[in-house]
Length: 205
Ligand code: IDP
Ligand code: MG
Image 1 (cartoon, rainbow, N blue to C red):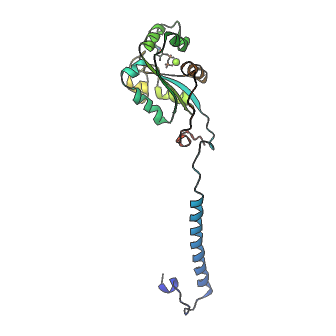
Image 2 (image 1 turned 90 degrees about the vertical axis):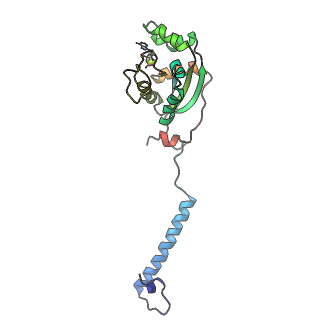
Image 3 (image 1 turned 180 degrees about the horizontal axis):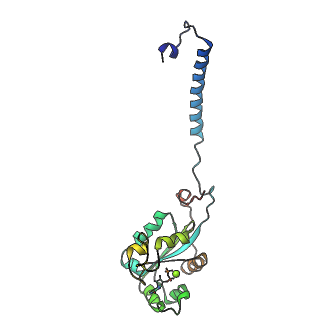
């Protein structure tokens, strides 16, 4: 563009079209400044836990004695954290015979029952309550199939073991089981809090 057009002097003879172009340029400039001002004053709203329709479930997980003896607790917890499930309860405890009987009531009479109760009560376990969309299914998927040898690679049971009984982790298998099991291990209730990452992790739009 020529300097004459950019900085017109009064002596320059201008046509109607040039005037229009000049004022349009000024208007565009003002528009841009105004848009920037409005954008700064009203930035686009970040997703918030209040505005999203977040349907969440809570599930009970137990890190079994083998997970603690093998020093895998941290790595297993990390998998759930990375997936976006929220920790709302955690308790290092020794399971009593009574608690084990209550928790595994559905397995009474099965050939592995006595061994299972003996295993689960031999040393501490880590009970956890995790929350998130479809938390029960999501947690079971991360855990993998019951027996380590059959569990897919990439799952907790698939990556960390080959045993049938010593399979590191328990997870509720339905909303009904979750409610029943959470009441056994967290009778005092859970910690209710809003993780700031939830809108990014749990959005379902
Ligand atoms: P799940 O833990 O994947 O839900 P369930 O069938 O509910 O599997 O069995 C509960 C637990 O009992 C298993 O996690 C495992 O520790 C143990 N278990 C199940 N079946 C056998 C078996 O055939 N031999 C030895 N232990 C078993
Ligand atoms: Mg089960």
